[in-house]
Amino acid sequence: MTGGAMRVDTRYASGGTVRARRRLAVLVLSAVAALATWLGPAASARAFTPAPPEFYGVAVSTALGPEDFQRLARANIRTVRIPMSWPDIAAGPGRYNWLNYDGSVIHAAAAGITLIPTLRGSPGFVSNNNNRPPLDSAEEHALWQDFVRSAVERYGPGGEFWDFARACPPHPGHCRPDLAYRPFEVWQVWNEPNLGRFWHPAPSPGEYAELLELTSDAVRGVDPGAEVITGGLTPAGRGARNSVPQNDFLAALYQRGAAEHFDGLGLHPYARKPKQARGRAQKATAIMRAYGDGGTPIWITEIGWSIKGPRDNDQVTNRKGQAKRLVRVMKILTAARDALNIKLASWFTYQDPNFKICDWCHGAGLFSKKGKPKPAWKKYVRVTGGRR
Image (cartoon, rainbow, N blue to C red; front, side, top):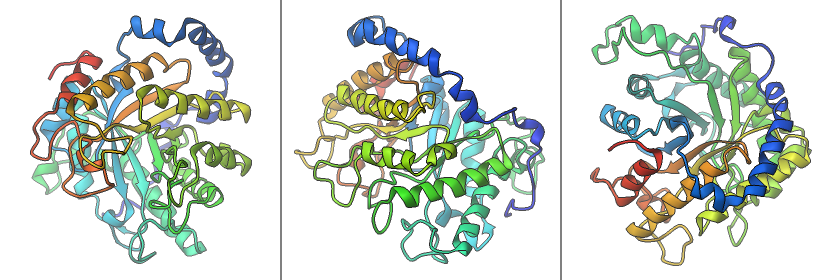
């Protein structure tokens, strides 16, 4: 089923653009930021109160089952970022197989979990390298936009998935007439576009600005009320090969007029120490304000540390250190969420993957490959005020 022929009922779209509404909040946010700066982070930490459950999340690298989503719900972790890979979904140009994703959407909705999909990748009929963006021709532009529109038409407000799941089609495992209605309202564009490993052959703010425009036009053409967020920018720099540092990349996006094409800034503020993650968010906020975009929120779609990998890597520690850093960074980001307009703090990753994404990623999970909880999981639940 392609989902390409159906259009969303615009009654679900709210008036005006998300970006325009965000700008109305600039003065309020500035005042809150000033107060938070005066109080200082230490005062905020002493008075720590968990944020709403939607603020806490996990980014996943492997599929979750229904018991995983229920576990997250009990823990007051109510946002999950999932990859939505075009190569994995495409059955050919303009043809899509959504069934594997349908299962995740059903399990998440049943648990009261919000999903944030990351749209990314080029299938084999576009490129032999799935990290090369589909920007080389008008045909590639059209194929990408068709994929994006089809995803929104399926899972967005009024999307065909919600009728499909409730109508009890001849797929018993996907028959849920009582399924909660939780359409996708936030869409992330690509992953870490300032790194060459995810943007072949080399990261380019100009190219990424072009992809943002193509994607936002496709998303908003179906759901004008949707929020489009950038791929999570990493610090890069400091010896990272084939990369553009976070702040340089962000400033270049604004210089290329990309501000009108995103409603939130995705950030992956990886750092050696938790307090440095806040510093990276502060620098991004300063750039956004310098370009008159201080009302646009930050979505931290990845942050974390690993128990495996090179010992000299900033992201590698031991089990106790991982748990300690998780508590510290989540408390810091919770305390800073008003001052820096942070909408989400999402841990990477839920479970150690069986494959090697990077030289430390395979040990970053809250659970081991066999599904056993690490101390970091127990600490995360304490931070959120949930239960295991």
